[in-house]
Image (cartoon, rainbow, N blue to C red):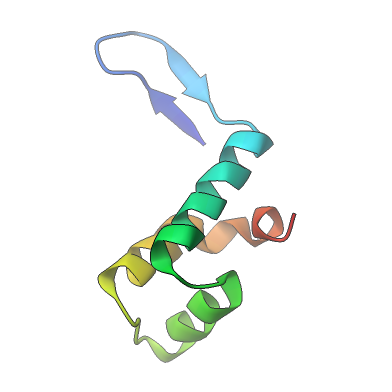
Amino acid sequence: MTAVLPGRAEVVKANDADLREAVKHALNRSGCTFEQLAEQAKTGHFDTVRARMAWVTIADLKDLADR
């Protein structure tokens, strides 16, 4: 994952530790486990908007959610 810092021509690349922290934060804010979000995604019905936002953000990062 990369980001361009506002007002700067610098690109910052997130490392595994950064991504693990982002996954942890998204799960904490959603109030769900990765497995619960995956189940909600299967049905297409998320308990909250936060849960949906978390899933969109971390769906491809399961291996980092398990560490």
